[in-house]
Length: 362
Image (cartoon, rainbow, N blue to C red; front, side):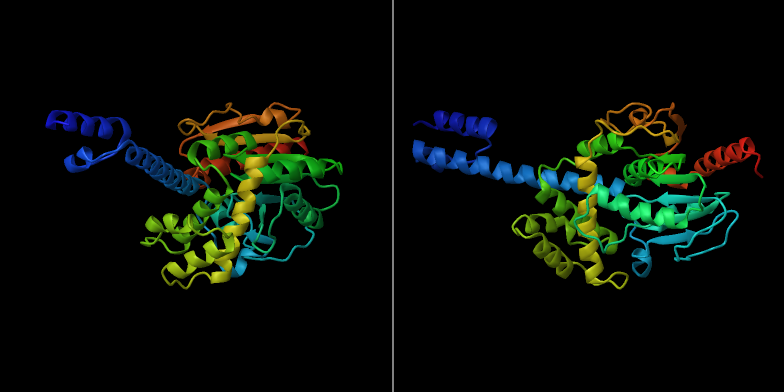
């Protein structure tokens, strides 16, 4: 083999197969050795691809998972929030009320804190229904059953319901509204940038995971990022987790590897990672065929611009859930910032005021 042929072979291997050898290696190369190198290269590319998939999934979770709230309050089923007409800050007792009340469902993290800025602008009493971290391996029906028992224990007999759900919360809220209607309780459902079709498209677009293992690892990394911001471990954590099979062991390893912090206990970190996985599976597995259409009004508030590559209708496919036309309001901002948009509260307050006017109430 002359030097020109060796160079040509070397360049071909690098260009076509990403196999890099020295000139001396080329001269002693055999077909058996070439097959071994090709096999190893395929394996390395597969591993690299898996890592990239997991990093993409972790990045996508930044949109859906942001704030765990206060650990001491997370497992309170209800939290009454301060509003423009109510100062019941932090009350957690689920008791029947006589006045109108807005039941609110937060996003994937399931805690009330994310909705506080919105609540302060509402001209109605507000009660956030929290999912907590104590109920593991729950499916959609089980989550909704818990919420239904809470709502019916608080809602005054003969009252209509007011529901406002954000992001992941809209999936549960649609089922909750259907369950309430089965008992002849109707009302209004506000969907704040959320619906099954939209969330499934968002997850499929932003979170390019291939299996539960990768999704779990992404959730672990995102959880560590939230409880320990600006840490230096999650950049390398994904690779370590890929070598541990058991989910509990992966969580334990991640907690031990993360910086010491005082806001959350290790038990809470482990629990939130597990329940967020359950909630992600609710979104992924949600079946939008043969859903029960609601008699209640559905109002969707969403950003003007849909995230890149997310494919869904302007009404996020909510017409499948309603006998009535879905009212859609387009707002500035994105999935994260829309919660703080004062126009959301204005829309909600106007709908409530119009309803009171039609019913002859003040």
